[in-house]
Image 1 (cartoon, rainbow, N blue to C red):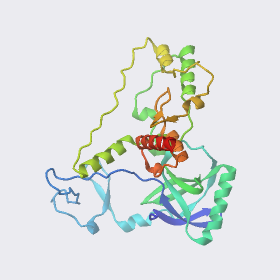
Image 2 (image 1 turned 135 degrees about the vertical axis):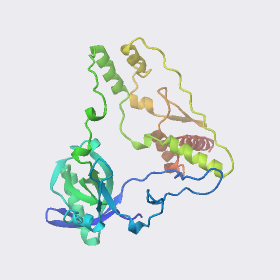
Image 3 (image 1 turned 60 degrees about the vertical axis):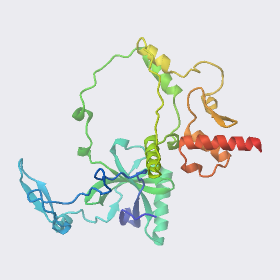
Length: 327
């Protein structure tokens, strides 16, 4: 279990629900620290007075804000900041309900799981969850987290309520504010038809298990190898250089799967991997996905499969397949 990031009350109309917020995400993989080369001495950062160079104790640090073009600041004491926090900063009051999917992903900042704070909160919590799930709605509120106020969306997610903080309208940039205008280009009918066909041919259902943090995996392997006094060598696959295409139409045609128009098997059927001997046969379209390997590993009851990388799964499935064939 982890510590909650916020404890307070979620107001559903006049129904109070005591809740705790827990971070729904965490970064994985080795944490890289800084050292002085040739030593085991960590590099640390300290608070120093930029004029004197002397270290400053944390209790002597206050905040300030620039008020002019030069070094003009006002100092803000902690009690002054506490006084201007929104009334009821330990309360999230639902002020309205939106249709699910009404808020674009661009607005989402961080997401937290919401848990009932005590046994007495379980029933109103379940009532709100069920009402939102059945009406396909999400509640809108505001919350104060780490001295900042955020808009927040409360919605059913993975069997529990989640609370997602949002950016304020003046914090979301317009494309014209950060990039040059995109020039208008006329599209031909054939180009658009081929583009739609390519999108359709490569359409898939979202499953996060199909994706892998390959850099994080290699970094972990590198750290483990050096800890054992050995070496780790990464040899990236060399992609074939793209062939020159005579125009956009030709490039789109070459992008389409090789099976276009051949045979009667469905795309889903062609995607299924087959195990023979010690290896997993790859589909003509490319590599077997991690999701497919996980499914096969589950059928073969491969231990520890949920924590394996894609390459580890492929090896384990191959070994399990040949062991099953021998038995």
